View (cartoon, rainbow, N blue to C red):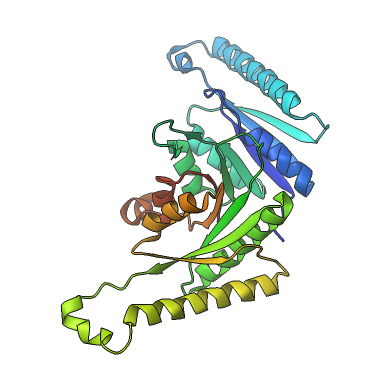
Length: 302
C-alpha cells in the first residue's frame, strides 16, 4: 500500500492558479491524511532598507498579510473541515529555505503546482521545481490541473536493472501506481523501456539469417520485466488492472513522453535518485530529462 499520513502543499502567490492545494485536499479525503500548507513572502525593496526596527515591522506585516491570504485560500478549498496547518515563511532564497524546511520534516508527499505552456502543451518547470527534485528526500507530486476531473489512467515507469537502488525504486513505483489507481478507480499500467542494441548491421548481419536477434532479446527483456512486476505485486498484495507496456527506444527520456501521449495518461509515476551538485550538472537526472517533454502530472518517487 502507498502509505500517506501527512502531505505538504506549496502555494506560490506569484502565480494565479493554485492546483496543489485542491489536489492535497482530494488526497486527504481518499487516504485520510493531514495537510500542511506553506507559502513564501519576500519584499525585494527590503534589501535597500537600513533601519533595523523599521525592517522588522515591514517583515512582520508582510508575513501576517501573507498568512491571512493563505488562510483565506485554505478556507475556500477546505469545505469539509479537514485538519490543515498553515505556514508563512519570509525567504529571499526560496529554493534553499523550502528544501531545508521539507528535509527537516517527515512529510510523505510534497505537492507543488506546475503550469502548462499553451503552445507546447507540456509542463513548464521552474528552477524551484528542479531544486526540490534534487535536494529533498520526499516524494513530490507536480500538479498541473484542478482536482476535477480525477485521474483516469496512471502509468508507472520502472527500470529493471539488477541493482538494489533500482529494485527498491521499482517496488515503490509499482505500489504507488496501483494504490493511487485503486483510490481513484482508474486504470494502472507499468511501463518499461527496452533499450535497442547498437550494432553495425553489415558487420553482424549473419546473426539475422536464422533468427531475429533483436526479437529474441526483446522477448527476454519483456519476460524479465513481467516477472519483476508480478513478484512485486504478489509481495505487496497489489493489483494491476492494466498491463505491462514494453516500449522500444535508445533512451527512456526519448521514449517515455511519447508513450504518455499515446496512452493519454494523466499521471506518470517515476523514480529519481536525486543527484545534486556537480554530479547532477555532469550526468543529469533521467527524471529531469523526461520532465522537459512530458504532458501530464508527475509523481517523482525518491
